[in-house]
Structure formats: C-alpha cells, structure tokens
Length: 440
Image (cartoon, rainbow, N blue to C red):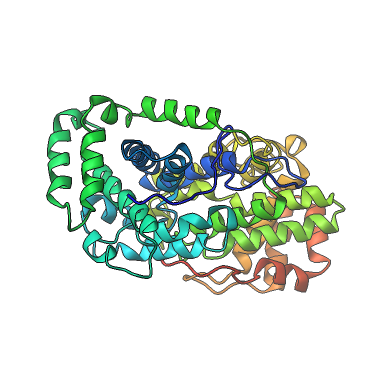
C-alpha cells in the first residue's frame, strides 16, 4: 500500500485529536470523545457491538505488516473504527454482514463521506470512507484518486469483509476453526475485490492465532486501553465538539423517519430556554451538546421497533426505554463530560421520580436536565411525523399544562418557554445544517 502523510494521531483515554491542541471552554480530549462515540456506531449491530473496533484492529495489524509508521497504522485504526459512520439502520447493517458484496453498499459510504468531509479533524478519513466498498479492479485505475487513499479504502474493505465472514462464528466460538476458510475466501478475491499486496499483508498478519484471538471482547478491550494510553491528550475547541456532536445527531436522527432532525431541534430549543433562564454561556454550550447527543442510545434499537406505527408491547417498550441508559454508557467515560452526560441521559426522568431509567426525583435533577426534558417533549410535539402533523403552539401549550398538572414536567421551565412561543417553535424546528442522510 502506498504510504502518504497523515496527521499524527494521539490518544489519551478514549478518542482522537487529529491536529494540534486548541483552546475552548470545555476541557475535553477530542480523541477521547471520538473513541467513545465510536461505541455508538457499534450499537447498530444490536447483539454484536464490536464491528468497527475489530475492523480498526485488523487494519492496523495489516498496516504494521506492510511496514507503515505508527502514525499511519494509528490512522488505519481510527479509520476502521469510524468507517461505518454512515450506517444507523439495523437493516442496512444486516445486509452488510450477510452479503459479501451487497449491491446498495455504496449508499452508506457516500453518507459517511458527506458527514466527515467538512469536519477538519477527521476530514482525511472522508475519501477512504467514500471508497471502502469499491472493488480494487475499479479503484486502481482511477487517475483522480491518490493511490494512498485508494490503498487505505481497499484495506478497510478487505478487513471489513473479513469481519463479515467471521460474524457467524464469534458467538459460537468457532472462529479459530473457520479462520482458514475465511483466509481462503479473501485470497480468492485478490486482484478483483482486493489489491494483491493487501491480500498478502492480510495473509501474513492473520497467520498467527493471536490475530484472531485479539478480536474477542477481552482482546478488544485491552487494545483500546493500550491505544488510549499511548497517546497524549489533544484538546478540542467548543465549536469542534458542537460540530462533532451534530454529526452524530444526524446519524441518530437518520435511523428513523419518525425522528429526522429531532436532536438538532432539541439542542437548539434547550439552548434557547437555558439562555432565557440566565444559565451561563459555558453551560448553554454544554446543554446544546447534550441535546445533540441525548438519543445516541437509540442506535441499538431495532428499526422495526422504532418505526412501529402501532402500540408497543411490553418487551418493545422495555427496549425503547433502555436507550437513555445506553446514552449514559457511551458518554460517561468522556473526561470533561461530567455534566453533559447526566443532562443527556436524564431526559426521560420526571420531577416525581416516575421517569426512567434512573427514577431520579426533581431535587436531584440538574436544572439543565430538566430543561432538556421539556425541550425533548416540545420538539416531538411540534415536529411533523409520518403518522401525524406537528401540533400548533396553542395545542402544545394545552398539552404542557396537563403535564405540569400531573407533575411530569416543571412549571417554571414551561413558563419561560411559553413567554415567546414563536421563538420556541423556530428553535425547535430549525432545519438541517448538514446534508440529509439516507441509510437504505
């Protein structure tokens, strides 16, 4: 694989800063954030939540076999973790695992490219992601594509297909006995699907048992810890964190036509309310980020449940209700998100303790979390959904008065919200600022 210069990637405790440290009100390591948010991408696998990490581990191992530098192999690791950033649908994930060469695979590649091309810290990944399902016999002759980028994309394609072939064998423990067959299938596609030199690198790297054993959960965990420990922190600016949070909010909202643009509206409305309640500018930034990320856990909900037009049964409701705890699990280990995490995760808690998943009462709920809850409900009511038209401001006000009477939301926040309903509606329905996502 041709070598190209890549920004030095550093790791500190969970994500990826890909450029020199910058300043901002939030003291957060960008690498830490990106590694944590990669957990959200892996949730789409429902019962198998390690795909991106395994692809990153295998890509880096092949890079070392090719003699690439540490910076280049770290780039491949990061690229592998985020290569499916365009996938939020469990249906799409199922096709990508079950079919070696799914005819619609390019859709999520284009989505991933659109999401990252304008985010400077990760922009170098945009083109490799765009072409990570392109066959080598088509890719190699493109004069408009840097050979190094083509090699990165094709290597991710190769190890991505290795993981798809391995998927059926992780749960039953048969991977070690099936690895020879998997290697043979990859070898059979050398020169067509995959660059011959990359196939040779994979065959050399995967000859050892350790290559396959590191793909088990304990092996993945150890490698993640090692990657985070080896790199120095790189601070992210508040605008960068907002942009990254917005990218992930688009991934979540694209999962269902019922919730398109929901997270962006919740974030904007939460900030609108917070500013009018005299919350500090720094915490207004934080509540906006919390609003963008509050539904991350929904990525683990099967499409059929999230899009079900009728009433959910008890089992389906329990799955839905777990999403805010999944959000908590993803965000809780990000240093600098100590306030953002509970604000995002508590958006279904109620003043009387009757919410979920923690059943926290109002006295223990931060004001910002209580604001986010009101914004979440308001945006859902105001937004057009496939099964109904968005409610008018007057209808929402009647609905909110009933919720206040039941003790389910806080009267003071509602009073602030309703002082300028046109502005609240505009904040809740802001329209999208990034390209629309199609996942099917």
